[in-house]
Image 1 (cartoon, rainbow, N blue to C red):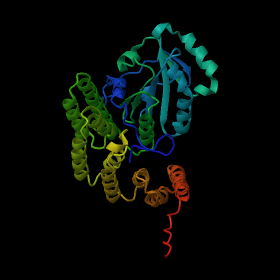
Image 2: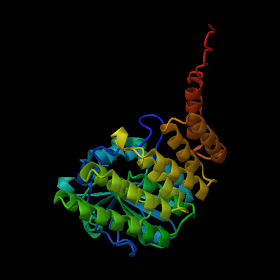
Image 3: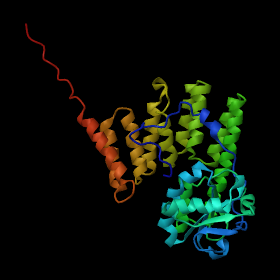
Image 4: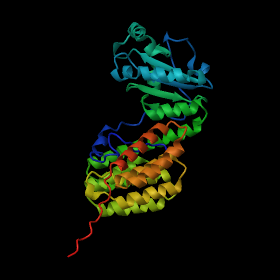
Length: 366
C-alpha cells in the first residue's frame, strides 16, 4: 500500500472534522508540461559545485532542479534535507542543483555570500541564472519549486521539493524501480486529481453539495484508491447532507465493488470509524471492509496493521493483537518493522490492563 493511514500516538485515525475547510489550501496545478523534453536550463554562474551542461552531462541520470532564493524562508528550511538526500544518492545517479536568479533584486554576490555562510549544510551544486530564462521556461514562480527530469530527459514531476512523493519517485527512478513513462502517468493522474479537487472546492463554495458528490465519484473513477476523495465524500454526506443512510448505501456499494482492492478497502474501513460524532460511526462496515482487505491481500504488513487498528478501535484488543502480530511477521526486515513492533507492544500493554471478568457469587441458601 502506498498511503499510511494511521499510527498509534497523536490519534489512531484520520480526523474528518474540518476536512472541507482544508480544501481552501488547494493550489492550482503547475504549468510545466509533464512528459515533454526538459526545457533548456540556463546557468550563467556556478556558485557551488563543478560547472556542467546539466541536460547533456546529466543524460542517463535523474536530475532535480530545485528553484530557491535567499529571501525564501521555506527554501532555507529544507536546505539540510536536500543536502542529506543528495549526498545519499549522488553516487547512484542523482544530480541535484539549487537554482536561483535575480528575482526581488537578489544578486549573484548575495547568493555567493549566503552559500558560503551555509557551508556544509548546503552541500550540493548551486547555480545562478542572471537571465531568469530558466524560471520563465519552467514557470517556477512559487518557491521552493522542484522539477524532476528522468533519465531519458523528460520532465516527470513538478511541485514542492519537500513533498514525500517526490523523494520516493526520485529514489524509484534512481534505483530502477520505475521509469519515466510510469512516472509521467502518475504525475498526469495527480494533476487530474488536482483539477477535480479545485472543481470540488468551487462546488462547495457555491453550496452545490450534490455536484460536489459527483466530483468525488469522478476522482475515484480516476484513482480508485484516492483517500482524499473518499474522505471528502464521507465528510459531505455526514457534515453537509447529514445523511447516514446515504453514507451507508454508498459505503456498502463501495466495499462490494472493491473486493480485490485491499488498499481501498483498508482506507474506507478507517473512515467508517473516523466520523467525529461517535454515534454516527459505522463499526459493522469498518469490520466488513477490514476483513475484505485482508482477504484480498494477506501478505502485506500494512494491510494486516490496518485490520488490527480497526479491531482496536472497536474494542477487540485480542483480535487487534492477533492481526498486528501478522503485521510484525510480514514486516520483518523492512523499514516498517520497528513501527509494527511498537504498535504490537502497545496492544499487549492494553491487554495486560484489562480487568478479569467478574466471577458470579453463588446465592446463599436459606
